[in-house]
Amino acid sequence: MENSTEGVVARSLDLFLRSPVHVVGEVSMLIRHNLLRQLNTLDGIEVVMAHPQALAQCQNWLSQHLPKAEKRAVSSNAEGARLAATNPAWAGIASERAAAQFGLHIVSHAIQDEAYNRTRFAVIALPQTLAMPPASGRDCTSLVVSVPNRPGAVHDLLVPLKNNGVSMTRFESRPAKSGQWEYYFYIDIAGHPSQPHVAAALQELQGLCAFYKVLGAYPVNE
Image 1: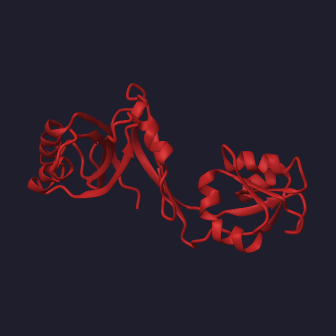
Image 2: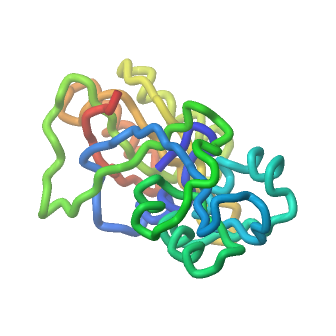
Image 3: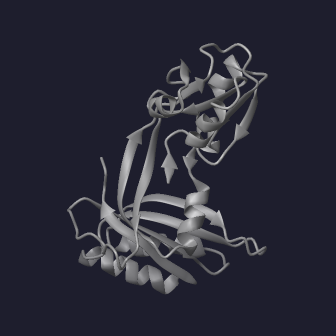
């Protein structure tokens, strides 16, 4: 869902809007990117392939060490490693496990621009498969809303949270893609809908929205 270097993964947010799944957990992982190749040298690399997020998280290193190489976005880091195994002039950005799987050398370790590069992943399920987890005492509730296009509408979203003592921990906007300069707002708040003050805030918030959807409530991963 989110990376500490590059911010929100926009495509993931867009998919939540249309998908029937809900979020039942989150995992925060320290991400290490490695440069993988058939040959154990940086010389002669013409193309570097990885998921767009990985390319962005390593852009300073790539600009310094491989300024002339083409940076090519692919569907996943694993796919980049697989393709790198087919051409000695290609390299991929991926994990040590991918290097072992595809028989590649790790030409350079930990090439991410930030040493403490972390990514927050969502654990998702269909509601009929796995219900919303009960309150743990340290929870996050995620929702997506839209509001009428009028002055002060976005500001008004904060009022129910403030009045009920609920903290907002994340606020992201994404275009509604309607051609009308309208937006969806993705909000994380501290707490669980089973808590009375959170339930009251959500009920008031829903009354202000043209669109309202709770994406899930789940324990916070420290």
